[in-house]
Amino acid sequence: MWRRVALLSPMISSSSRSLKLSQAASGLKVGESFATDIINQDERVSPPKEKAPFITFVLGGPGSGKGTQCEKIVETFGLQHLSAGDLLRREIAMHTENGAMILNLIKDGKIVPSEVTVKLIQKELESSDNRKFLIDGFPRTEENRVAFERIIRADPDVVLFFDCPEEEMVKRVLNRNQGRIDDNITTMKKRLKIFNALNRPVIDYYKNKGKLYTINAVGTVDDIFQHVLPIFNSFEQLKESSHVNPQSHLGSSLVENSS
Ligand SMILES: Nc1ncnc2c1ncn2[C@@H]1O[C@H](COP(=O)(O)OP(=O)(O)OP(=O)(O)O)[C@@H](O)[C@H]1O
Ligand SMILES: Nc1ccn([C@@H]2O[C@H](COP(=O)(O)O)[C@@H](O)[C@H]2O)c(=O)n1
Ligand SMILES: [Mg+2]
Image (tube, rainbow, N blue to C red; front, side, top):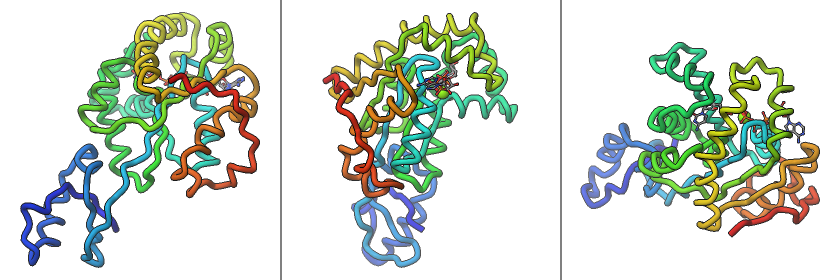
């Protein structure tokens, strides 16, 4: 098994390098490991450089179709889907120490403190063997974004923004029928307000950085996915692990890279 360790070479003599590396390896955080060396614990050989993980943030208003499109991206390109909302709902279901606080905030369409959400994401990133992630519904606020940079010490490679009119989002959420406590008109109105006030600045931030891909989220699920395909097709490292031949899909060029 490959374990990630920080750049420790200067503090390690050649004879005891493997042992000290493996001792030091436990207790590392994801952010530390992103600029790291690795060691093969079975073979004790010189480690090759580990590539930084490929991170996609998936943004869009409530009901814009983020989760639906993420499922299709996973099927085609093999990324791991981490939905911030699902991670938070799991805390509620498991009655963890933050569960009750999270429930109250979600009921009211409010944003959970960034530290809590980022730590949940961090756990998933660190325990995964996948190196390609779709982080859905995150960052929701500038505070979320800054906390991710501080704790995880990584930047997204791609930011998708599913752009959908409010009327359509309301219709979809009210028809979702998955028993979500926030799928009602009162909470939906609050969520839309929060989206416009707090998520829009994050979208603008990535637009200015040239990382934002704005996708028209109106149409059938398959039509919309046709706009997503060419984005991921343009990254060589994603083609390597694709489950189907993404080239066989006719990705349209209706995507706007808003840089
Ligand atoms: N293109 C589409 N056309 C019609 N309905 C859609 C489309 N995409 C998704 N839906 C439906 O709309 C609802 C909301 O979609 P989804 O859960 O993917 O949105 P979301 O952006 O993840 O929302 P949230 O932020 O609330 O989690 C679901 O019931 C889904 O099946
Ligand atoms: N970064 C986030 C993401 C979500 N929340 C809370 O969860 C609710 C549901 O999120 P979905 O992505 O599943 O729509 C959302 O309204 C927030 O209350 C959060 O706080 N921070
Ligand atoms: Mg969702």
